[in-house]
Image (tube, rainbow, N blue to C red; front, side):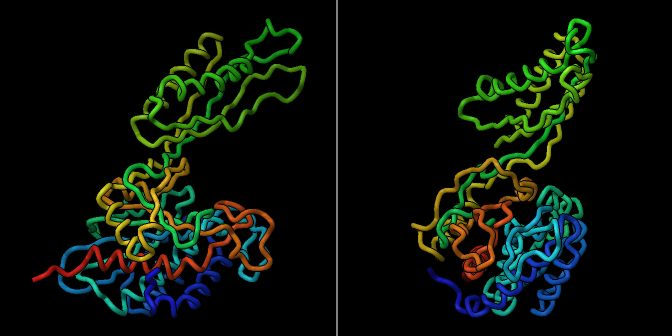
Length: 398
């Protein structure tokens, strides 16, 4: 493993910064203190800072040489609205808020790279350090783009990285193509005519219709989507009735749809609408159908993924650079990849044995109250960022 010595020397200080961020988590579009900390560090290292893009976003600008070429590196800053179970010294000080996805670590890794890049500038061009708010459901990447991120800071490509618990520390994964799914949700209200449960013939009962819909939706993936295309349709909430002897007026269904392509998403949504409308009509039930598209699929471009893999191999060895297994989780870095070529990679976080005394008994997995970022990744992730910049913006031979 070829870590940059200066980054390793600074790793303890960077880890202390990461733990400070962990202790002070902030939710989407509320990352005021976090943004202040990031901006202060960048300014201390002589890096010009642009603030306020996407509400609380921070962009650091590091230039070297005369080339007009530029790339962007992105880290997310927000926490989750959940209660932390850990009791170690850097556990959350804000009830109901927790860095349970490692965004504190992502911010720290990019700051570690920023310090080195500012001090050495062994490249020719510009790197934009994008500290993004509101990945956890707020679409902060989309909002930064809407505020002119790539207009004000034009780049050739954009790169992101997420820690991935469970794999061996020192391993990366990157691949071209879809790596995370689109995230979408639906809400369906079936409106019948309630009445006495002992006299169902006097009612229009929406409950059997809801039961048939739940089953019918499962045929969309098994019988309408091509077997080689991945999709998930999950009904996760069913709300109906208040008494055992009363047929309710309404039933509400809610759930999620995940796909790796917009074409499959279009197909699933249309099929859901058709099934719902026709089945409801067959039973005389009125229906309200709401389908909300949240994040699109995260799709790496092939050339940029291969470039990232080569840089990773130079840092940790080719045997530790894995193919990226796509996941049905979602990520708003997808918006950046819709706007620019790039690669979203995984850096494995270990099995949780790194956690300090005082961690809760649960597993160290994402969105878990026992989670904590592995500080051993900081010099590794920061080194990767630096080597990626130096390789992408290598001075042209005369």
